[in-house]
Image (cartoon, rainbow, N blue to C red; front, side, top):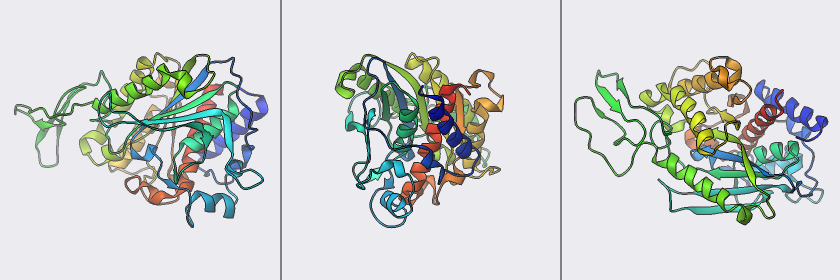
Length: 356
């Protein structure tokens, strides 16, 4: 980690964001990147981003109110994103890589392999995350995103080790939901299931495999790298599960298994984990979104429910950080939402890494 001043700044932002005061105004704690490379004698610290469409790039860069340009150049937010000439800054110590594919291993598309900067017409939470962890860590950093939209934790992203369960709906019909590698997504109890061309956890298998392939060719993605270690995971997901009473009720159990399985699959038992709630959901909600939020707050190490997660798992409550809209509508493309949530998730990760 970098000097105490940097850590205190990041910790202050974490406190502000997690304390629900919102990120606007707090981002000035981060200075402009100095343009210098990281200490390449150290292994690359890899942070893996997973989830569904909210984890993708949905915040608009150009346009009027709600765009990143308007937020930075008209409202003065996130000043570290632009230099004195008004150009987007670039971090030479953080590499951003994004891959995507539908389903299991194979059919991978590479979208990004560049130093962390604002490029293209859309941004996601990777910008705020990358600047937070890049500022706090002296070693080279890779922000590695492997995700695709419209995927549920209880079905497409179900991690290995997950077991089947039964659920009775409001009409009194009991359904069987499969465990890992089961198919179809559900069937009526007592009936013979008719498997389809997809199984529970297929997208999980694919997203993990695509991330591993990037790490297997590290030099291709981080020039001059001297090895790597997976330092943390970021998870922003839940919209699809929130629309199912069965899957939202099962979310906590599946999230616990996800954390454990990701650490196992990437041989990273000490990797930190940060998750973020759906922006439209307020505390106290009892619908599917409320169940997702409650599940995330339960796995947060500070809740005490899972002692093994203390100091290594954090949940970010994003409703105060959202500028409106919902996860289903990608928050109307408001870049401030993606920046605020990204900053808060990154600050939460820095706090876990610092151990304070």
